[in-house]
Length: 213
Length: 184
Picture 1: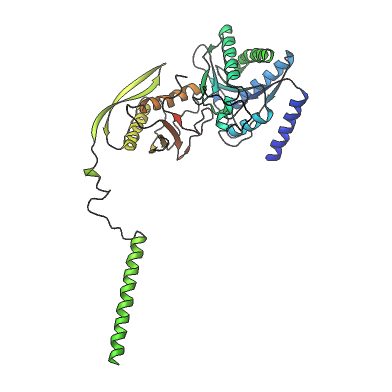
Picture 2: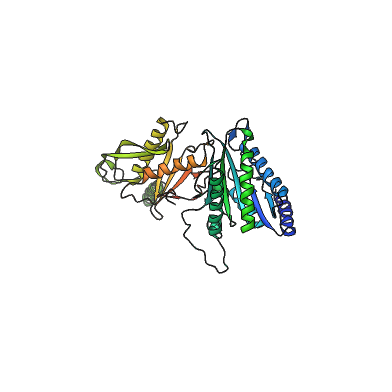
């Protein structure tokens, strides 16, 4: 297991070093053990992976100067947060997007955006070189995270396809311990193929983040 | 000969006596024999007073907070009170069909040092199919119910079978502040 992880990390590192561009790490929902919520006849794990691949392809097609990496969790636990944090912190991406889909019952689909906080968003880490505890990792880029969350929210409000909820600061498990700016997007879909509706808003958001840093 | 006989009986008495004392000490030390006074810690009926108290149980439904008034037997022991309150809250959720299966609260223990209330359930009360928002509001409703005036609790650690609650969306590995995250 460790050798496989090391191998994957080397590939990611190589990709990261060769393309010295804006790096986006996408984390689809679910683990090897947990398939996620059911949407029709399918599960969240497969649908979010499809969505992640579609974003990666769209970014290439639109020639956005960024590298999109997808993390597939091999963790056998239901909560894969420590493994995700390890990979994300090793890669040091510029943006982390965790994806989550659920079966929508309302006529207009909802879009929830979360970023990690334990009620300590006002805490400022010292600027000197120091070791950062895992439970304070989200504070390293808290201002950038907040800015990205607001950008995405403004985008979604303008497109008006989704009911965009104001970004909330919560202890969300997939983003625990990640130092890079990280957002969790929970998107409502009415049927299995509706994940495609989320591709354009996310690609547009990546493009904006990429252009404005 | 007579002298020898007397000496022999003395030795037997001495050995028997010391063996008996040793056995008694061993039995007391090993808790085979428990000695307690007349007014011990077990006489609870004289020290604790219980009164009926009206309390609010909160839950989130149809886009707004709903509250239900419940009468609880209020005691001097904060742990017992919190235990009864959470049990009542779980029962209210079950009645309102906000949780599908009956959930039992195993223990409610307050750590006086960090003022954390440790609540251990027999299973998670968070839905697998629900949105993160719904599960978040479920935890917020528990925190809102526990926010009593004059409470000594400042944070709540959710446990399942005395282990941290594992949820794929919400991080319950650390205690949640009693004030929750709704205002942030």
